[in-house]
Amino acid sequence: MSLSVPRGLLRPRDVIDHIHDITPDFLAERGLRGLLLDLDNTLIPYGSYEERADVMRWAADLRRADTRLYLLSNATGKRARFWVDKLGFEGVGMAGKPNPRAFHRALASLDLPARQVGMVGDQLFTDVLGGNLAGMYTVLVRPLAVNALPHTRAARKLERAVLKRYGHDWRP
Ligand SMILES: [Mg+2]
Image 1 (cartoon, rainbow, N blue to C red):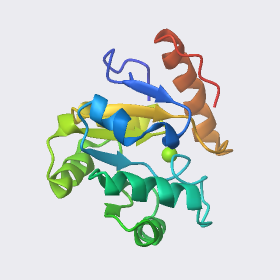
Image 2 (image 1 turned 45 degrees about the vertical axis):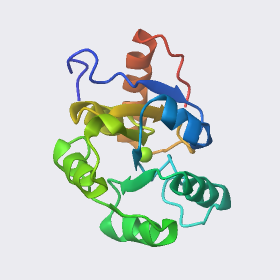
Image 3 (image 1 turned 60 degrees about the horizontal axis):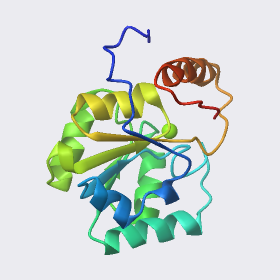
Image 4 (image 1 turned 90 degrees about the vertical axis):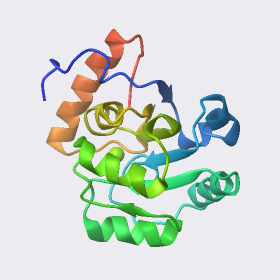
């Protein structure tokens, strides 16, 4: 993917260090009632099947505060289903992010307008681009683990160049 994407579509509204920075107050201040959540390197280290008590607690706390959650992952359907079962809220794998189709389906499932939903993920070219295309509030979170796949490493370099233009010193 080139850097010729219209200026702004790759720009996250917030850049945070960890999902724990997202609290009911954080969401209320931004008028958000739901979140679409990326899986790999956002909630769970890439490829891991190990349950993380802190993530489960975080998700449960948000849901208790009436935040609607949905897992939107490009991982395999099998991997996404494993985590949907663990996490206890809806979601899909093979989402094809940044293709807006999956975002629109997820929004319909949450029954919320795009402007009231945040997209939270660790990648600019899938999570942030897709969220912005769908008219959502986008939150970029620092990746939990360094992914050694060559295409991901290349994307990280491009992400860093884009974010530098937006004034963020991004070192995943
Ligand atoms: Mg990810």
